[in-house]
Image 1: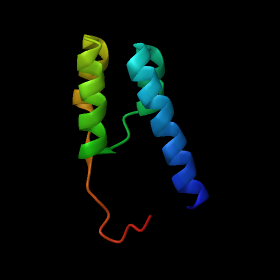
Image 2: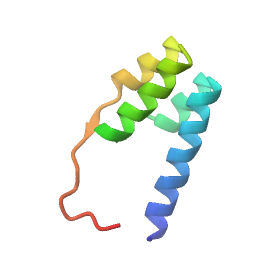
Image 3: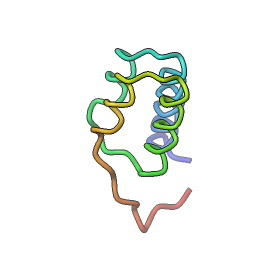
Image 4: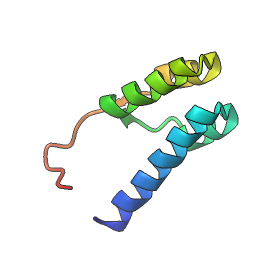
Length: 74
């Protein structure tokens, strides 16, 4: 795993924790309007909906979708 992938994974885990904890300001900071894969966005939306946090739901819904890189190798 490359350093870039490790950083991306750590950022996503922090984002997931912030969504679960309802930390809207931190979620906004971690998202920084960066595109996200549809599957990642869907999962985070599910978590936000479970917590019934409308502000986080709106932030996630406005986030652009990133196309899957066909050359990606884990």
